[in-house]
Image (tube, rainbow, N blue to C red):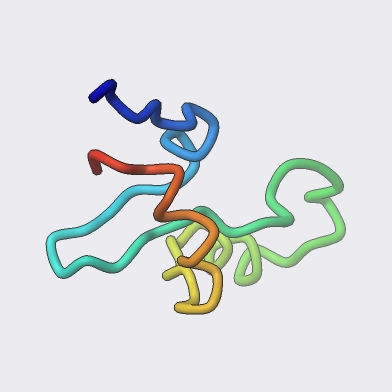
Length: 65
């Protein structure tokens, strides 16, 4: 049986931690940063956990992670 390919774009965007949760980067930190407060930008730098309903779409793309 052949290997299942990992979707590389998903592999670069999401990381799995030891407890099995999947981490992601937050949005809205790419441009137009002058109008966002320092506090907002600081909190956007922190990683977020992917919701369980979205894992249905992400985990099949990461078969060996």
